[in-house]
Each structure stands twice: as C-alpha cells, then as structure tokens.
Length: 633
Image 1 (cartoon, rainbow, N blue to C red):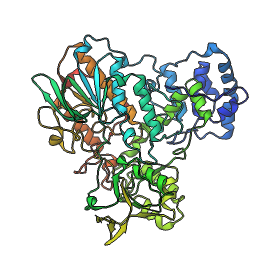
Image 2 (cartoon, one colour; image 1 turned 60 degrees about the vertical axis):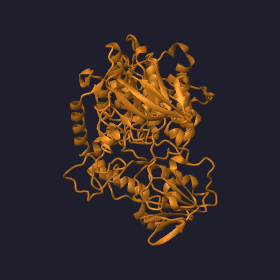
Image 3 (cartoon, rainbow, N blue to C red; image 1 turned 30 degrees about the vertical axis):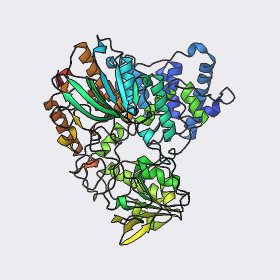
Image 4 (cartoon, one colour; image 1 turned 90 degrees about the vertical axis):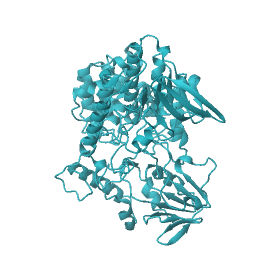
C-alpha cells in the first residue's frame, strides 16, 4: 500500500501519542513487545467490550497505570532495532489476549479464525497456501465484477497462478464504491475492520471513510496485484448458458457497440446483492417534470443549492444524504415509511488523528488487536440477543430481555437529541431493534430533521405528479425528487439470464433463491458466487470477512478440480436441500423474521433470503473445509 508521511514521534511526544490509544489494545501490544503473556497480569482488566467503545471502560487512574508500564517498554522497543522481529504468541496465549481485550472469556474455538483474520496464525490454513497442483492453465475462469469481492477473488486466484479474466461493466473498479457518489456516501462498518485482512491500511482519514477514499483503497489493491492486466472494463455480461456436453459456459457480452461470445470452464459471480436499483411502487414516477433519480445514480453535475428537494426513504442512503444536503436546500422534505433504529457512535463522522495513525503503523500488534476489538462486540457476541424468546411479551417492540434493554438505550439516546417533542413519535421505531439494518448515529440525522427548512413526512405517498408528490389529496411541489429506496436485494442473478441447463436462475427461483453456503447452486454447474443468498451480515461483522471465507472455499474447490483434472463440478441437490432447511429453520427464530418487521431482507412471501443467521465461526469453519463429497464431480 502507499506510505504517506508518518508523524514524527520521539521521547518528548511519545506520551501524547500513547494517550490517544485504545488502552485495551495498547496493553495487548505489550505482549508482542515483551514476548511475555504475563505482562497482562500487571495491568488493569477492561470491562466487557461494547459496540463502538474501544476503551474498555478504563478509569483515568487505570489508564495511568497502563501508561507507566507501557512508556519505558515502548521507548526501549523504538530505540533497539534488535527487538523489531514480530513476535507471534502461542494459540493459548492468543486466546488469553483475546479474552483480555474484550473483557470476557473468548472460546478457544475462535482462536484459529481470529488468528487467521489478524494474520497471527502460527500455521496458516492450508487452503490459504499457494496451489501447487498441476496444469492450472487447462482451466479458463471468468470473474464477473471488479468490486470488493471481484478484486479479492482475482487476488486469490493470481496467488495460485491460475489464469482468469475479469469482466467489469463500469469503466473503473470499486463496484458499489464506484457507483454510489451521492453526498455523504460512506461505509457504516468501522474502516479498520472494513478492509482486506491481508491489506491493512493504517492511514484511513476517518473511522468510517467516505466513498472516494474507499474506492481509492480498492483500486490500490487492484493495481498492486496487477489485476488491470486481465480486466476488461465496460464489458457487460448479457447472458450465460451452460452446456452439459462440453462442460463450458457460453458468455454473451457487450462492450460499447461490440458484442462478444466467449467460453469458460468456470464462472465466479462477484456482482453482489446491492447493485440493481429498486424504484418505489408509486404511480406517476415518469410524469414528474423536475429532476428525479435513484440515489445510486446521482448525476455528477446535480446541485441542490436553493432548490426544494424531496427525499423518498429513510434507510441507510437517506440517512447519509439528508445531513449532507440539508443546509444547501431552500427546503427539504423527507418522506418516511418507517423510521430506522440508530446505534450511538460519536466516531461516525470523526477523523483519525495522526497519533492514532502512528500507533497503527509503528506499535507491534496494535493494528491487529484494534481490528479484533472492532470485530468482536458486534459479531458473534451480539448474535445471541437476536433470537426470539417465545416466552417474552414485548408487545411487538422487542424480542427478549436483552433486546428490550437495547431498545431503551437507543430510545433514550434519540430522545436526548430531540427538542421538538412532536418529532418523537415519528422517529422512534415500534419494531424490535436490529430487525432492520442498524444505522450509526452521531446526531447528524436528528439534528438535520429539526432544521427550520427540513420536514419529516410520514403520510403515505399516493401519487407523483408532474409537479411533485401527492399525500392526503394535496400536492407538494418540488424541483427534484431523490429516490433513496434501496436495491432489489432478494432477486439474485437477475441482472442477466443465467441458465445452467434447467432454465434461468431467475425464472426458477424468483425472489426465493436456494444455494449451498450462499456460494453455489445445484442448478448451476461450474459456477460459484460471493455475497450470495443468506450471506448478508446483519449482526454487524464485515461483508469483507464473509467474502474472504467464500473466496477461500471457492479456491479450495478449484484446487481440487485441477489436482484431479476434473471438468465438471456441481453441488448435490440433497446438500442444498439440507442446508436450505437448516438456514430457514434458524432464520424463523430470529428478529429479522419477526412479524412486526418489514425490511429488504424479506422477499414477497415475507421470508428472509438475504441475511446470514450463522455465527461467524460456524461459517468460517464450513468454508474452511471444502468437502468433495458434497459435489457431483
């Protein structure tokens, strides 16, 4: 990665830099510096890690104690080059450090997974090693898409020396981070975790970076691994058909006015879930005479200054757009169908200071344990609270005792931001927390809704006219309407026909897709996908973590094909059916399937099809163990 100038730290200002640290993480780093796990016995213990908190509830006195021990050790480390060899603790010591950092016992079953993600594994997974199997050049592979997962898949195949091509419909890389350029667009997973495990970036300018910086990160990774040499930009796949006679996919594609027909042994779809814009089912969309567009298709030259603007939607995109444009609009009206739950997080728009960047860059193990501390509280630690307690009477607003406590915390946080009492009933949800995508709250959303030129409208829209939006038999006139209405997330492989020999995937499944691990389907031979059905992470985590699991599994399958000189691979129907049954049984017990919840996780039959109910360690173990017996070969 690029190496911008690092702030100069010496004995005079080292203490100032250490004062800006996450103290549980700083303590963990001392194990790498001293090469001794017993150092933790000399330090105060953090309390239970909570999502968004990186200080372990340490008091000032406890922080002082840690600094008094850390300062001379780090001074010695920085002045003695012989201490610079990175020390990797044993698995038992790693478990002890993990438990220390998050203030609770971390099960030993998590050690291999987290050690691999943090690049602290003593014996890395055999499936991460470069393939030494024969004749990889006999296999032709197409990756569709050069977004986050397409770049990842390309990197992992190139490490194995396996030839492939990437077709990307846009003229640059980044996928969603290339296409979404609306004001305020940023990631809502902490950036020091929302990045490839093998490509750390210590120089994020913000804790939750904006779109240009995210696209730049993925483009740097793309170029570093020379993927530009095998990528066709502006190459749009139009159709795919598999021949069981030849065991080849025929790919119809276009590039400008040119049309192409090519054949590949294997296809890996990396097109994701959130790329097909979903327009609201409101009559009159085409009749509006002003500017009207979906948030993912924001015109580069569009300006809101002095205009009367309508935003339809109050989900993740609207949540970012509204605070970014409110001050520039003459008038702004937000049309909301249901309010979002928000998680208090003051880091959401905050910049990372130079001292923190220095710590991430220079202190051994600091960046890796910081990643773990961001990872853990919002992942499997949270999942248990998302199961419905059948004996709990939450009146439809909560699903268990813990969920009800969270509801109260979130409600109190929102009420503390509201000066207009009439707004409260509009912005506080009546469905259980975590039933929909949880949004990060630093106060910007509710502050915007209370500006004099901003209104929140909860009356149903009955029609869009040539002049504006009709509600309650009256029409509000607007200069522009922004459709922050999400994506067709439930309709997998719908952007072009994919026919594995039994009809197209879309015709067969509609918005009720079936798969094995969200990676492969029994109706699609020689085909894999990332971010497939049932793999969206709605209990925090990072979709990059899931994609790395999927890429590892796909590579293991390809390694097996090459080693055994196979020309065909398709998952067995019984394997898909058994997995699908377990998936649906688990989802039926969880908050996303609760009757009071309506979200983009659900299909038209009210069933969750997008979201993963599994513990991350479960999914990691499954994808870490490719089993040829699951396939017809």
